[in-house]
Length: 419
Ligand SMILES: NC(=O)c1ccc[n+]([C@@H]2O[C@H](COP(=O)([O-])OP(=O)(O)OC[C@H]3O[C@@H](n4cnc5c(N)ncnc54)[C@H](O)[C@@H]3O)[C@@H](O)[C@H]2O)c1
Image 1 (tube, rainbow, N blue to C red):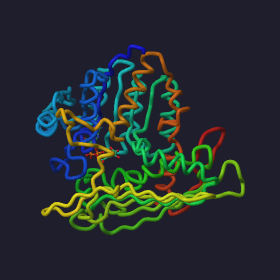
Image 2 (image 1 turned 90 degrees about the vertical axis):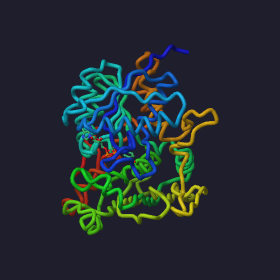
Image 3 (image 1 turned 45 degrees about the vertical axis):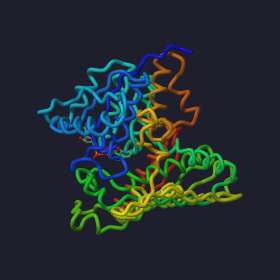
């Protein structure tokens, strides 16, 4: 076994996914104590990670975030140190603090990016140009041109760049992918993903302004569909349609133009057989009902030449009913928050955790010289290279909504383009 050095890592973004802390206090979603920081604190306990930093925009949030992590993580799980360096300082506000904190890192260190969708590209680019390994949340970028640039830059600087598509590590989705690929030619895919209207308050700072619900939620199932169809079929045309009127009304008052529910209708062409064409429908909404017992509705249907697959990830045969709150379907296969018998954090087998650990392992292996970043492309992991069609479809969908027309996708001189 090679002796792997521990990884120094900077978390960009201090919000719901990183800490569970939102603009209105502790998150009311299924991620009350976040995913990213908790996983990294545990990986530090287990000896994979060394120094941890966290960068946001408004430093005055850090005292509350530290108290929240101390109270809900350090006091709950045994031996879990929740300390980290923070940027900007507690009395400062600086939207470019990520540059200051990245400048303090050394090549071979790592950055994980969980900031609003429209900031991913600039932060990822800055980090890669500093020789840092990058894990960027979905959607990797909003523009296909930016995604292609990150592919080129990560190759040039020989760093790992993964997109945090954690659903690829859900054992049910991973198994379904293998079975779907055995069903012959692709025919039809239909995905639905939604979150309750209350998320419009959590995401008030950017919802409808800097990103849309398709980028935010459909990115998950578009990626799963692209992963199933990798080297089997390619998308050729996208038409988008949207419902509106709820997000822009009281009490949410999102800016005019904010869509409630977005549907992308995508044509797919088989790679091997000219006559086989498929259709995919990807729908996402952030105006789902408030008390449905789930945070994220998520199900899809796949039809192939020789059979079909149905999968409902919101209802996994495990529900809890409490007098005060009614029925809730939990998903400990994603993040398991209940402690182990010894009192330690016990969520190491959750796919939210595994997704971050795979990135940490990849970066450490590359630093030790026992792997090349391109090895992970060949393994089918969600690298920046392997996820380019997900961004192409999302970007085409946005153009289709804005310009009210179909958008074509094709390859020109080895590069994907929209037209
Ligand atoms: N919340 C979830 O369940 C979830 C799940 C998977 C992925 N994501 C993705 O994670 C990203 C962030 O989501 P969130 O839910 O944590 O959002 P959030 O709105 O709760 O938090 C966003 C954070 O980014 C910080 N930020 C904004 N601009 C920044 C900049 N220039 N430099 C550094 N930090 C900056 C803000 O200060 C805030 O702390 C989004 O791209 C989202 O798609 C979220």
